[in-house]
Amino acid sequence: PGVSPTEELKEYFSQFGSVQRCQLPFDKDTGFHRRYCWIKFSTPQDVQNVFQKDSHILEGAKLTLKQQTRRRRSQRTNQSE
Image (cartoon, rainbow, N blue to C red; front, top):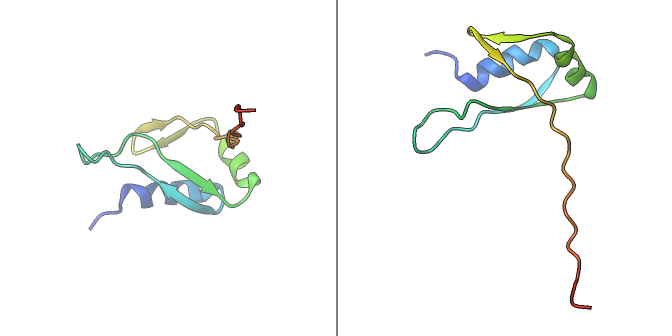
């Protein structure tokens, strides 16, 4: 049996630091992955290590990286005053 795409991504990104989680969502209709994933690193330094490399290529495909910023939960206001 081969290595799953999730394991392959986790293994690749582990060279930059400790990977806590790797999520590769799949489309329920097609059964294929959606061409994006989330990688969670243990430390901010691990994230910086990834972005210090100019390009990332995995199995011949160039990866585009984006750093997610935390979203603030919108506060609901009571407008019935």
